[in-house]
Length: 152
Image (cartoon, rainbow, N blue to C red):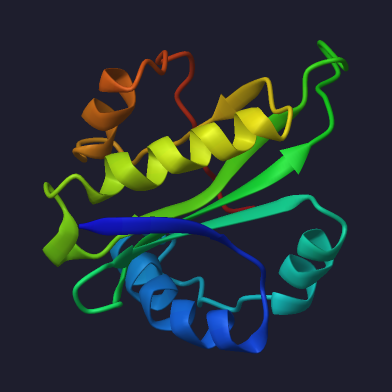
């Protein structure tokens, strides 16, 4: 079973998340010549002012981290400044927990948490061809855009 909680970034949770973040980067990082170089000071600053949400799923049997989901809060959007957004920064589920319901558990917890905090719109991203696209569609997300990246 997966138990999900909102975490605040302290040294302990950062150390616990770093291996999974590195595995996520290796799996989905995008540009092969771009090294992972996390600016934890920026993440902590966002967390300190209430603009970062970190939801972590734990295996209740082992207390291992099954996955995590980071959102950055935007107080509104230029198109509609009344509606606070939560924009997915990263979402990762460890391979052994995929297809176990862990992604749905983490996402469901996060949605409830964000809604209670007044978020009106959640923006998610998923790599093409991954099962997470199906999870998002099943959870009621609309496929509205494709995102493309280019190194300059």
